Amino acid sequence: MTMTPEQARTEANKQLAALYASVTDWDRAILDQVVLAIAGDGQPFSMNDIRTIVPEDACRNAGLYFHALVNTEHPVILQPVGEVRSINKKAHGKKVNTYRLTVAGREFLEDRQAARIEQRRAAA
Image (cartoon, rainbow, N blue to C red; front, side, top):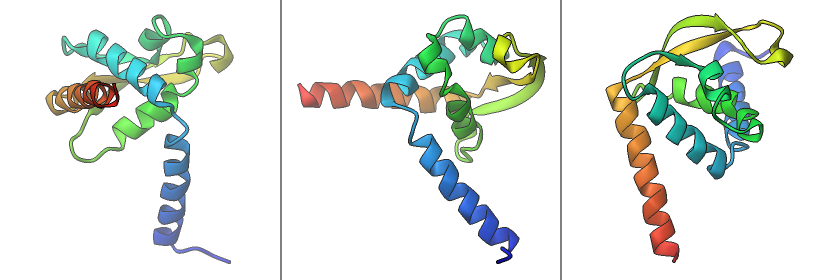
């Protein structure tokens, strides 16, 4: 069966949504915190920067985490601004994107952090 471009896009979005769900709340919280810390001054950053700080377990899902942030349309959270070579030996020199955190992206991540804190308080 041949799919139309719209059907293929819908199917791809369903598969991506399932993959995004595999990023744990813990990993998302860690990665949110790291992105806010290293990108808060407006300087570009890449997965290489994350890799030097975050435990390997959280790094495994970082690609999906970044993909979800980059593909969020409103607000635009991360703007791709370039590429660098990966420091991950398993990547064999593959290029990784560099990003800049937008003002709206900072607000989005800060709001997400605040919501997590509120949820923990409510559960206690």
